[in-house]
Length: 441
Image (cartoon, rainbow, N blue to C red; front, side, top):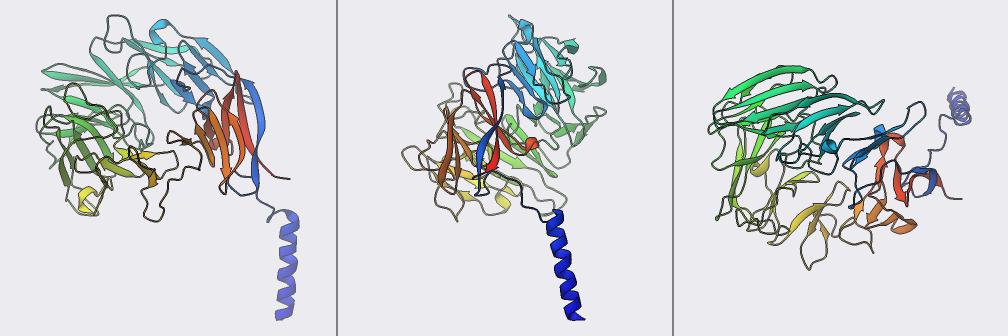
């Protein structure tokens, strides 16, 4: 009986192999057998800015925008288009929510306008992703701020106009431009954008749930996206100073104050939670010092709020005694790691953290690796682009098992496309080139 079963299993396995169930895996970058090959080449839809980037780039939707031009690449049944924007909506800012910037969610692009004589946004407009026309437009009163808070399934365009006595918040449907709700919060209130402008790291991808926050002298609350309802957090009183950054990690709110003028003292305060460590919050007071930043003329501190406080998978508290690296949720409740004075963390696009300091070789933060993930021969400004691709200035290389197997030049910042099988695209003069993996002969 055993022999019969064995023969039956062998026959079944042979059938699986011949039928393709155990077919060889398709080529993939980083598999040790594949090299890049050109899959397509077409004109660059919109020339990038001087820094090689676009103000709007949504590769999965084929959308590119810079200056007065926005275009969508044709892809199969998806129609392509190109449109020229009015000067008010020219895309020149990389700071979402600022005049001449854009806010994006899925395939939706909301343009933030700016006019001469206005310091803040002048109007907002949405582009129809299928036609390239303006779907709707709204004028904004002076002093209005614009943001795009979201949760797992919803994104709402939020406009806020604040005075010393109150803040007026209005939620707009990003698809139709219709008003969803409007609410006035009395008293001096600060509204913070936990998704982008006031987040710990605007490009971290931590946007599963990033509601608008309200901060008063003694309370912190959130605004519901569907109805505008204000929900004040119990047991969380904001720290002294100006709350400048805010983030939500699971059921914990983390607030960060700007460094105080002269003393540069700052505080990170996290709320308690109903799980894990119970209702314990955590707090860290320190003297702010970012060694990679110039001195801010207003505070006298080495402070640049554009530098992320969330790097890789860790939170960095820029302490004068040496940056403290902690888990963003548990913070000082769990042991952290202290860097040496002058050291700071950077992310090279690999998801791992690299320790950098002037005059010293980069090294990995991880204890089990003494060196950076960056391949030999590439400079400290290099970034990982997709799997096994690195860009150093205009130099683009594919490295596998420590060997450079392909090299090219890119006039723009190359980008990966996970939705297209992990392909990588770059600019060759006026051409946009897409690379895919093929097995070596």
